[in-house]
Image (tube, rainbow, N blue to C red):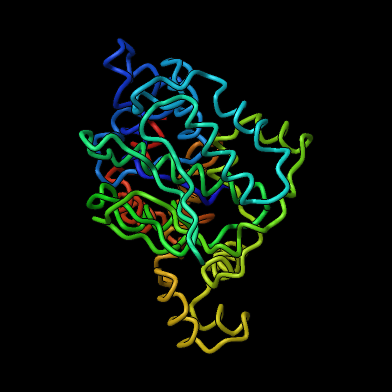
Length: 332
């Protein structure tokens, strides 16, 4: 979990409707140990644990699991009851049908609907035609549907496409992480997830017992779930993570994976990333994790993040987040 962080774009979106009902966003940020100053920095990131806690705190404070983005409030407990309604299904197709039907009961827009074609299934968000889609609630609903479906069958579900009916609101890498390197298309006609029909017969492997564990913190569970993946990105991340202090080069990682370096570079490119991107993301997210811990010096954190000199680490960190490690830690 320590390698994970998220753009402040999502923290801003979580808080966007809180002011309208009289809440103090600064208080919510401080309660969850997030520096308000970070929200002013375009490139800043926060740890995934802090973001998950902020999202839950804001939902509870607003008494709305949709964070004010739907036409009707979704009261606290909605997600939990949906899970109980779905957990008895036998296949993924049955589960997604029941998932959509559950949210349609609230008559709140946007809501999910399942559309089945000959070889494709579309989980499409139905929207009031007079109300253009807002990026964050669309992204949140599609993310939740994808991650919950993946949790039900205990594997990351491959997507044929993620279609979004607007221009990118966040950086491309944020969408790549959000939808696990599946193809994302913007300015599409609809907001939807597109699955292969063959996935609908996958058996549900979760139970009432595992659901109790999941419901302790479903937001964090979905943000951090990491089922066994065969992607080259996941394999490279694992190789680097286990020897981050040595910071292996592409050739060494390729050799350990028994593949030619040029072939590995092409396969990473096909998955929408590069060896350098993976290395920088791991360094950055490891640093963010340890900066939230007490008792470690900046020099210790630099070393754990794969830097031989703290000065190089400070320069890199400022490039990632817009602030120095000292300023970031002080904000915490």
